[in-house]
Image 1 (cartoon, rainbow, N blue to C red):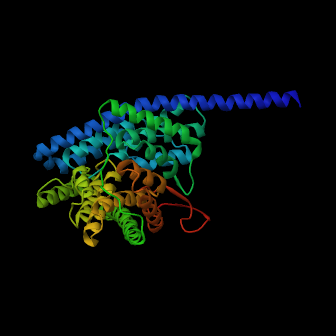
Image 2: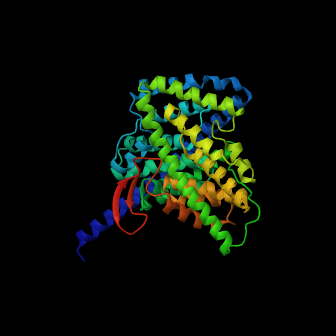
Image 3: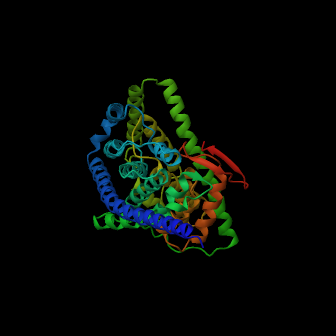
Length: 420
């Protein structure tokens, strides 16, 4: 065998393993660092939420705080804010993510929860993690492919530290960027960062949620059909949620062209609806309401009200994301469905959470893993079935317009289109 050829192969192998070990080291480093950041972020949101609930007058700052957040983005990002869409674009096309975006989304999300905007936390987590990973890749002058991997690693680490579902967090960035394919080259780094971040967050006092949904009915034809029916309904509601966000943004900009006036008007609308309802059930993330749905309680119209609250809050300019609101919507819809037909409302709430999340993110593997980590493995067959059905019935809609639908959901062909 030619000696030059052997030397070339050995050198190539050494470089490959060097890159792999460097990637592992950076993943562990980011997992630890972002575990700390994620825990601090989570604890901050929880503290301001508790403070708001005990000091109801903070709700009256809703019309003002949206203006403050918009002004901060104007000064620090010059109105070039594309949120999680920019993170996805950075993975698709190597776009730069300003590091200041991570600090800005941290502060603006905490402020949004302080006054009771109906937003989540995980959207902010994806932006923080993605920005840190992207900037670290540029700092070390890594290749374009390695920078993309580190961006996904950052997303996994922050998602894991916040939600407490490390398996789901490891897979989420692998499938959310391009629907129909998985970025398996980032699998090991994302797994390592996700697990380390979760352990760090746990050490800092951030618990992992787990819901006891009681006994699981045997996997037979009737319960299978009932769960499949719920999954179809959740897939359709996920379309309604995504389209409501699109139409809400379009018409709000059309009728209220001044963004500060728009924020004040919509913030006032959220405040008025809160006062009309008489409590803060639909403000913030709504974790307490999700808990009540999982034990079979909740109102029949809760998911509709939450959609309205969230659309108004997001369009007004509050920050935080739509993932936790999608859990709220799914849990509310599932509990209502279960109570209406007389079938295991707790299981239906669990299925609703996973399937609406699946519908709005187009991430069936992540959705299945979230269900298993939040509700246990006893209902695995139902979770897999429901997420598969919802994935099909949600069509090509999604929360993120930068998400690429690479392969069709309905037949094996390449389509490469943006999510609607």
